[in-house]
Length: 409
Image (tube, rainbow, N blue to C red; front, top):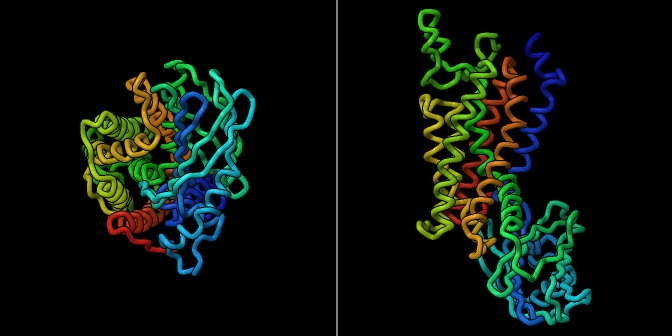
């Protein structure tokens, strides 16, 4: 009876839909993050020098750059389409000064590698009507193909940096040419931080893998019996035996909350530390090593739900692996750049944004997990979902560590 209710009760459908949808999105086709481009603009005396990094996978989808259809883009294939790429991209970008359009001229194109693959680097210049107030940016790249696409814009004017996130829903921004308010920059970087935790699928899966056991009673609590109620589960892993779930197999809301709090706090402290050190260029690690290690952490965290590896030390594991994840966040921040005039405040804002995005994920997860904690469904979700996360993590690791495309898409 309980199994039937677990499968059909509407109480369980929200968490099922959320979790399965997330895992479907996190297939190798989206192994790292959704579609982003990086638009860097340098303004001086009515002239703009621009550099636009656009993912080749996105351009291939829009322009069919893979001429022979073998699933691999070569330099010759990309080079032969330079004119088409420039025409396509610049037709979807409008810069304005003093309410008049700037004249944009395409320049050279190069190839660069970001953490999620190869990007074309389109350089251009623009002559703009004289304006001391603002530079208008109207961004429409991939608006007709991908409603989730984001353009990360950085404007440098007289040594002052300002940033913006543009999208199909928010394509237009008037970027001030005067010295921006430090608090405005803080707010911009808070938004950047929120956005990047929400698109950091590997970070999300790592966190969810650690949180899944939080609402289940520790295994020691089941085996210790009534003779040791006060020691039940202090340093033990939650039970993960599939089957019928009895009422004494689950955590109270208070216990689950504090379990989640310890894990999230440890993860936060660790990635905040390395994010700060890496962003200030105190410590640097090769991005390939970092991204591969992050993928491995996803695998290990999910395996812990199938076979206890941490033995009651999930917060310690969250801290240790959080150090690696901080370097991953720093790679994103390096693409955005930090304004030197308010470096510390902007870095703090990005950290705050990451934490707010993380707390939003926890705020959705914990109530749904707590409501379904007594069911066979949740145990099946924990084991089956963790198994699927392991597979995804292994694919990510192989792709990142060995620069291979495991599943050509």
